[in-house]
Image (cartoon, rainbow, N blue to C red; front, side, top):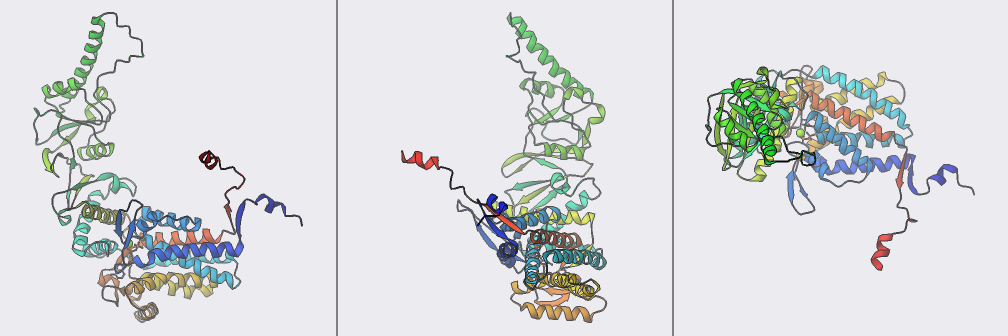
Length: 536
Ligand code: ADP
Ligand code: MG
């Protein structure tokens, strides 16, 4: 028998085709979801992640678990990247995204088994997503009080750290987010403008926001004053070094005089730069790279206190709060580049001298993350990052949805009512999609030891019975009872729920689209030179 041509071309690959490719991919996705579903919600359990070296992290965060796991299966990797993209875009909802995707796939597989073509399912899933998104916008509302805004951020931290620290970090995150409100920039503005500084002294609950820049630096010349009540600041995004004598360049040094005059010229150049700064009334100079030794005395004589060697991000923040413009070349600094600072002081943190510079323009700050051990500080920092991520995005899109599975129960009911309006077999896919949404309340129930079926039935009935606030009734896992989620303070941002549902649908559909999986085989023909050499 003659082999078909395309198969001959694929003889070095393992191949899974059609249904078995789908089964294999769905199995991988379900296995991955199984690894994180027990972390969902504040009653979720923690996972201990042990690295090869033996160091361990305990976490309740789905995306951390997934990013650390060594996963080879391509479908599982796709799910991990979906959850990472949820983390980048919304900073929350990562576990939800994974379990939703796996559930959508599992329900799709059942339909395929009963004879529905994957392309019909993909189409139905798209229609269901669009309808769910529209209904979500309809359900969502703005926060009605400051307490509600707090509740949203606290919900995103629930179960991650103990509750009194949750309250404290939530307060800090909202304060920082408010200070950034109205600033131009992308979602990652919160990373760029908020400096995190871990400090050994004090407990995590004493972590605080400083509306200024705290920098692990001390002034170059101890003869200059340690503190100041404000003045004019210049920031150089370069150096204040001597021009280098390039030895490859052929300056023929014929006499000691020529060398001396070269040095003199370099010195004069530095002096000119210092004079320029002085003429602009600058009394504080911050330089990203080095400052030549001989410039230090010139600066001190000119009444300028200088600091050197900074991360660019710190300089950007400093420029923001002082209203200065960073200049690359100190010879080109202009009057309008100079900013003003309102105070400068020396403070000791973790036993090391730091400098604090305050400005009056706002738009950047430092968060001192305190804690008695490195593990505590790191945990507090991770929680603060999550809280700020949510709080900051909330300033841009403040719409809220009920948590505790309420949104998903309502959307599932809505989609079941909507399905008959659609043609033919797509209806089945929309129903499968609706059922998949219920994985969220089901898992929340399971993780708190409740019967998932009872919970779904109770919540659905309660939502139907309350014509006004029905969609806001969900499961409060802390009491184990149904409750109005706004009253229980279990509130999710619309952008988290929306992104999770879109991301999960997209991931599920891209896996459904796969009809063929080709695994490259190790080529047995290639001689293994290394082991032959080892035998010699
Ligand atoms: P994710 O990584 O998806 O954010 P989480 O473990 O943070 O996973 O769990 C988030 C889910 O937990 C959301 O659906 C949220 O509404 C729900 N949740 C948070 N607090 C409560 C609570 N007290 N009762 C019920 N559900 C809650
Ligand atoms: Mg969360």
